[in-house]
Amino acid sequence: MSAHPQPRVGMVSLGCPKALVDSERILTQLRADGYALSGDYDGADVVIVNTCGFLDSAKAESLEAIGEALAENGKVIVTGCMGHEADAIRARFPDVLAVTGPQQYEAVVSAVHDAAPPVRSAFVDLVPDAGLKLTPRHYAYVKISEGCNHSCAFCIIPSLRGKLASRPPAAIIREAEALVKAGARELLVISQDTSAYGVDLKHARSTLGGVERRAHIQDLARELGSLGAWVRLHYVYPYPHVDDLIPLMADGLLLPYLDIPFQHASPAVLKAMKRPANEAKVLERIHKWRAMVPDMAIRSTFIVGFPGETEADFQYLLDWLEQAQIDRAGCFKYEAVDGAQANALPGAVPEAVKEERWHRFMALQSRISEARLAQKIGRTLDVLIDEVDDDGGASGRSQYDAPEIDGMVHLRDAGGLKPGDIVSARIEDADEADLFGVPV
Image 1: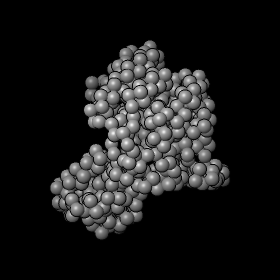
Image 2: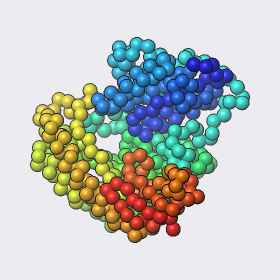
Image 3: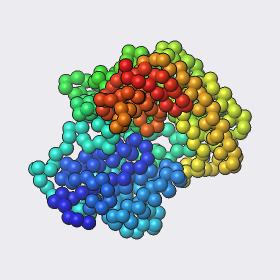
Image 4: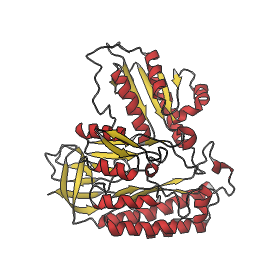
């Protein structure tokens, strides 16, 4: 590798958007310390691998990424959720320079300093007010809290990331204002449990610009919605006070979109998962929400094959899904996670049954998604452009679609547009995932 006046850092960021924000914070600090960023292994003096350690499949991907970074570069620092398994990582990869857990930003930065000492310079120690971002300029994730107070049987997040720890509202608003000023047209609010925001702070107030702000998701959402960007809420647990967010959607302060990880619908399975077993009440609330905001899109995730799940439980889930008319849904086949309470539960579901149920779930969800998207044909929707091509086409997302996980709106005759533009488009066609249209 060639020497550089500035040490150069490479980053491999795996896992969820919350981990992506962790990567952005690490890189922002390193940039402030005088480091340059490298887009490839050869140009990097050291490589950081931010791992995911929630499922065995995610751990396998993380281990593969560590091995590739070592083979291609040789100087590797490991961080993230899999950092809790430092002994296992070092046993397989004894040459890694350091292993840290999630949110241990200072330890990562210190390890980078040791591996490639910084070169201080007034000319390179420049960081945008909004920090460094790994997303396109026109959208950004805003993490409002860390950790979670729940003890779901299938999950080890509290042991990985700790109990709920909310950021002061003034700090969040300050960050969001800087992001919008830097060009963000969409703010994606994330955490482990967005609707619990502020509970740990007892909804205390903080001051910014002489204005007091309460640490509560309703107040925060209203404030974010006043900044002029699209505001999308993710990881919303359906507490009763979520009902108070719906009028903000009706008023245009929040996008008509909720990402709620229901996980299942059968009362017996929800009880075994240690999730609230009020599926009938939730269904009633969904209908109430859509009565107020008819266009609301609901995204969710579900688990099939949880220990003890019977065919009757699974059919209950399918029936519930049909009634709820969830717009977008991801489905996971249950995997045992080291340290999860569910590992001790009886009634393991055979892999072949999990696979069969997964296919049935996805087939039904595809039909529901296709039917709901078809209802948008003939309508005119605002589309945030994500990418353009050389043939006059462009692709973006409507208010009902989050980046990476939902569908796209593909536009013809869209010459002259650029990423970050918001354009009105007439929808001409749809399939089970995407919309197709033309600017108007």
